[in-house]
Image (cartoon, rainbow, N blue to C red):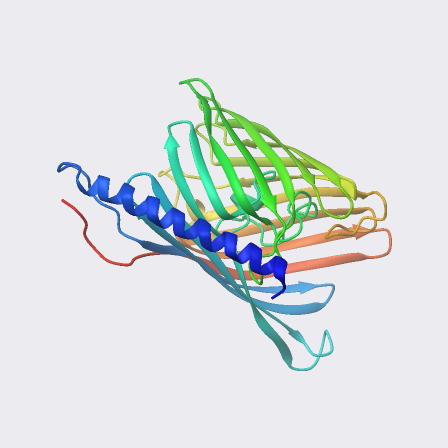
Length: 356
């Protein structure tokens, strides 16, 4: 570890020590509160799954488990962390021979949240970059409707999808007919294993209309390493009342290109229908990407269009079978992409009970 990395590690250690002291004092104050605090039990939750992917005739096997640790300290502090364990196994000769590969481990985030007041939460540590819809909200294997990420998923998430530093987020306005949320963050450069990040600064803001169940928002980011570039996103999420329709769309713009994706899923909830019909969820996604300045950096280098159609079947609310077919159209070649698998979501309290 060189001098710069030692300084970074020292700063992290000092931050953690100070945070633990503050947490201990706040927790001691909470312990003195009178009788009607229910207490907080640490929890491990998250998801696991298995996906068999065939892209252009080359199969891959991708088992995955993503445990999330949640530990509350009093009423104002929360420690949360998610680690990703993903296996990637492919045939030795792409389409023939034995499967070989390895398991990759990634600390996706490890952060302490301080609920300062009803309008602001201060986040310190390693956090997911709040850019667009996908990285923060839809990426986990047990949430996403289609297992392949959108073509533009790397816009605004370089280099690892996470930042090391501080973020302030919260609800700026809360009314019965409208609410507005915001996130503002700054990330430092880090080369520490499992805590890699780049210097970035950015913000995200959206407006939500509860009556229409419609959210419209935008993200902005400035990448501050090597070539300084600005990226932006505009997004929409809509779940029309009294229907099982879920529509999400996003447009992403960066130095390396621009593109969009739109996805619609439908799951019927009327109790008058058979259980089989209520367990099905058809999904469609259409997306395009137009490269600039050679593309790359996680983005296609040629103009690409892709259409995906999938059907998910919920055996239980936390257990589903998934299947999808996609067709990618590129200037150099076209590809068929198939996915088959299952996902499972779990919640495990680390102990039972709490304060009365």
